[in-house]
Length: 272
Image 1 (cartoon, rainbow, N blue to C red):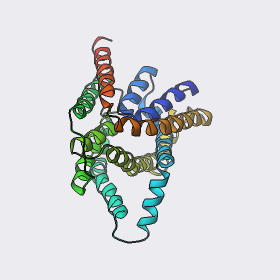
Image 2 (cartoon, rainbow, N blue to C red):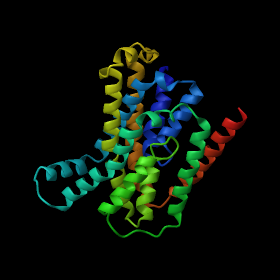
Image 3 (spheres, one colour):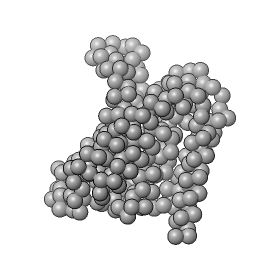
Image 4 (cartoon, helix red, strand yellow):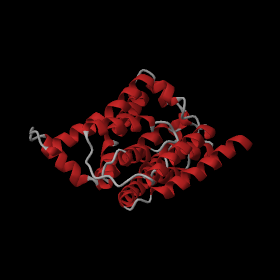
């Protein structure tokens, strides 16, 4: 992987993590296009996902600071209940990751056809919000669990995490700004968990010696830095933009985009 590929993939990660078009799906398509194997890009994946988390923290720094301050007050208030809802929403994806980690990894092998089919599902979810009535209520604990299940399903490459969670929240009747805010805050826990797992698998586990001797190490510090910065900056911009997009009910345009990319991916896999 050279610096230009890192720049493009970093931009893809940052933009598509928050825009409802599937970051994992676009990264798989990008890797397939550049001929980059998953085994060669673990360090890069760790770096761009860390940049993703940092971009969320920057955009929602006031909300996060408020929730942390309230948490250490040890009182039963709205902020602490909101934090608990975020924790509850992470349960499905944590369970899925613990029980089926190896099986899920097999899906990230540059299978363009599979990504295309999953993008069709993303397009369908986004299109469904076009017909949903404007919600008026806040997210409940039951909503948090259902949205968490949507997040768990979105580990499949091609199903947008933000698209699945925001669409689910809107279809449940939640307010637009609440749906977007919860969707972005709830991703911090699973992404941090995924980064921690990748670091453990690569540098701490018994297979670390094998991993350190892999072809992944040819990705230099400059290349990783380019990917990190590109992912962080594009992530901040995309996260801020997505908050405005949800409020203006323009998800249908992303449904059209996902449909087009899905058809291109499916066509490419069948004829090339």
